Length: 133
Image (cartoon, rainbow, N blue to C red; front, top):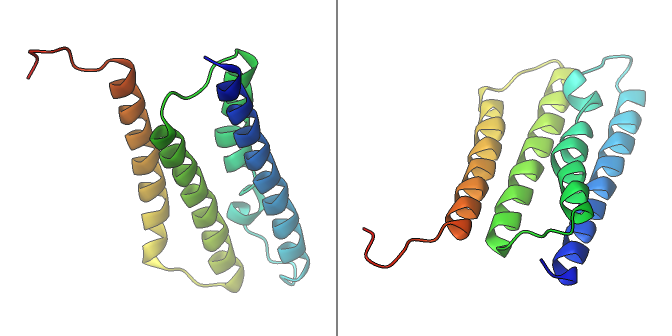
């Protein structure tokens, strides 16, 4: 792919890296004021955009590739953001000492968005040939 695709993936990776750093700092500060109550969801929320966002983006950029479709990137990034926000929200509720049955929506929505991005990516690589139904 072109250099612009590589640069786009580098910017995407840096954005995920910045979001990971923000979540790590947010989790650390939140834990300081949580009266020694901890949540693994809050502590490890930074790992989702780091491993799921920055790492793949940097690997794709390293190999000189890019994502052929902006929709794919937007769906994937939305899925990573949904999983990250869900992790932070669940961590906040655990630290507060309560639960909410709606926290299950975040992982489901995040996985659905990531799956949709993969489906759109595959369909953009293998478009239908004329005459196929």
